[in-house]
Amino acid sequence: MSSNSKKLSYNQGIIYAIVCYIAWGLFPIFWKAITGVPSVNILAHRIVWSFAFLFIWVAFTNRQTFIAYVKQPKLVFRLGLAGFIISANWGTYIYAVESNHIVEAGLGYYINPLVNVFLGYIFLKERLAPMQKIAVVLALIGAGYFTISYGKVPWIALILAATFGVYGLLKKKANLESMPALAVETMVVFPFALAFLFYTSASQGTTFFPSSAVTSLLLVASGIVTALPLFWFGKSAQVIPLSTLGFIQYLSPTLQLLLGIFIYGETFGIEYLICFAFVWAGLAFYTLSILRGKKVTIAR
Image (cartoon, rainbow, N blue to C red; front, side, top):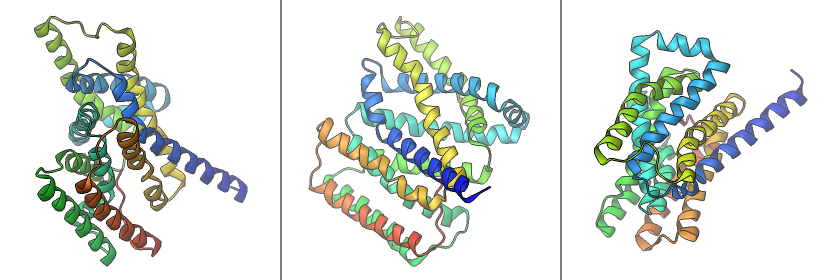
């Protein structure tokens, strides 16, 4: 491959990564557009239509890999576990948007890289550089300060960071192709989501879809909205270093923070400011550890 083609490949990877994280950062706009549907029902629809879209995707692009994964019961079990964990992440995020906690959701994704470093230390026996230790401690101080001063644990942020961190850890250990693996993950969770939708429809005397055609289309589109950013991320990860992705990933929580404050009018009081300041300081040390060439794990 010539240097020009390598450069083009790298540039394409950067574009894929930027588009991916911008899409994730703008997710609140999409979920806010779905009105009149409980968060748990939105989650169930997201799982159902994600599997439908992914199944069609892999049927045309990577059928053999998908079949090979499905034929391995232990692998299906591990991917199913990952599927339930990412579903918990999806559900928490949807609830955060629906209940006007977008700022706190953004905090969770700022904390996530530091959670990944911590999980790598605990489960993968990876050594923490001194700056990484400082980064984790600063994030803990920020969360602790918020809990004491605000009078409540930022559980939305912590659940989002923890579930996405554990999900990334499972994906890292599995080391599988992302789209077929995600298809298997959603395949395992799919029957539960579908059964829940049919049960709520029967018990509440409602239809499978809400009466609004626009809302119904948005629910179906949630499968595409879920899968495409993951596809873009997978493409970018093939050609650019994970450390570079580590920088670009801050786009997502930054956009969420701006949306929460300036578009949806969420409060950003002194408790949030100080908590974010500690987390941002931790991320600064984390970033310095990357610049100094220390070993950093970013699990996605």
